[in-house]
Length: 323
Image (cartoon, rainbow, N blue to C red; front, side, top):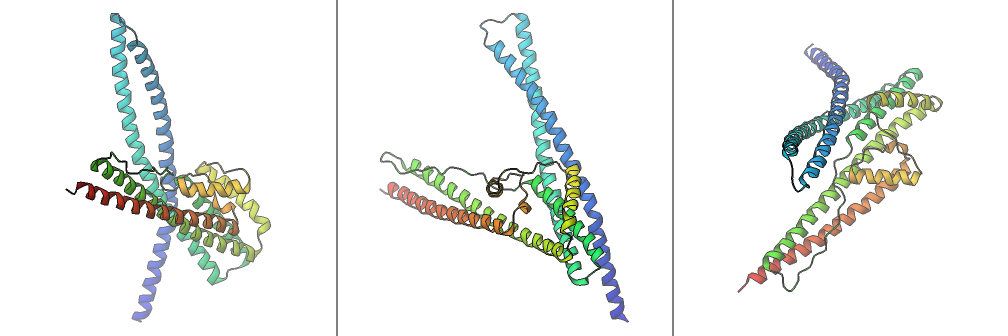
């Protein structure tokens, strides 16, 4: 009897948790859309203020360039300087608000992305274990595509948090360098080494994420294949596209397939937000992953070389300081 009651309680808790997850999705979607809209509105206001500030700056520069100002011109200059300072303060405050909203959007987006992924996996597991009717499987497949498209939109909106590419500064010890100058060069080499290692680590992280997403997408594709809804899929995806565009507006990339592959690689490297990886086949994604793996290895090799060079510079500093 106790065992039956325990099972009943566990089932009840599981259903309550599932219901909470499902109800949380619309709430998170609303929060994300509202925050995104607030960012867009505040950005427009900041742009308008920046234009005013630029106009004030031009007028101030024009008055300052004059050799002698009359009383009215001096009064005008004082007023412009005061206005300019006020605009600068308002822009600074808006920048702080935008940073806070961007952080909030990222936090909501990460939660939403996790919920989408969990919901997609839950639905796939249910379909794979319970074997519902063909009609139910077809409806579920279309719902999975809708969730996947919305999940992808969130990721595109957030972009990827990676380092921008940078040029490696080539340095060497000159004959007239002081110990302080050599140490500064060693610090520069060490800084570049750390940046390269962070970039390599980020590429590795993004590659793993891409693999995981492709595995999930393949499971959805297998489901669609099993129930033979390829004829209806194009219409379903069209509906998904319309629905997604209402919530989050982003342009899809155009151009040749190779351009799209390069766009995906660039997206993973510099954090652009305009590429949908699902437009590529598994083979094409494997090509991208191989290229990213090569870049990761190259960055790590460069980092190792910089580390050895920095160590040699630090040793040179010690030698130069010896009596």
